[in-house]
Figure 1 (cartoon, helix red, strand yellow):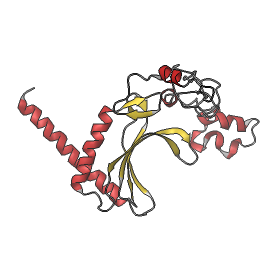
Figure 2 (figure 1 turned 135 degrees about the vertical axis):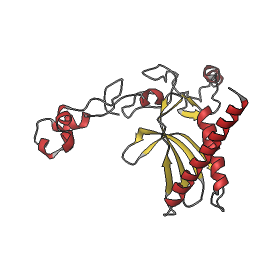
Figure 3 (figure 1 turned 180 degrees about the horizontal axis):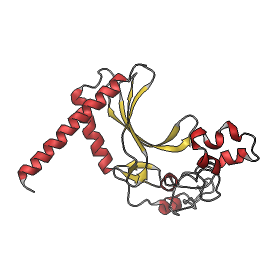
Length: 231
């Protein structure tokens, strides 16, 4: 590839970044009508470093701060939409002056840079730019051998990949976020398959069927790989 071609590609990438930053700026500013809320743009990304996730840019309408957020779409409190956060950094931090056009261009560069280099740190359940390759857990445990100190159990390993983790399912089984994020939903029940256009098994037509509550409870859900309960 010639130097001229490389320069043309670089110019194209920069022009796309300017176009993207204009769109982000317009969407965030237009949606910031309520000072007590966040204006959010969800990026079209489903995995980073082989980790299923949802990526968004959020602006606090009250403080003008803008965040890059990576979180799970289903691990956490699904009722209140409080999902597990894997990464949450401020990419614009000026409470007095709203972000201008050049600020948004710098933010887009920051987002591209972060998302291209972060790695998922499995044992801590977060994304990091430079996760440690070695964690001296055994050496640390040996330092705190005293009757006054009670150590956490040393068998805290994911029930699927058997690697160290600190996350548990709702049924109290150790499951790292990587394995948890890759659990697929179970198949829909027979009623959903034949009548999906009318709310499937949740439709009023099936209210009187024997055992329908249990069928609804287990339909199209993710299950713990250890005990098979819904998670």
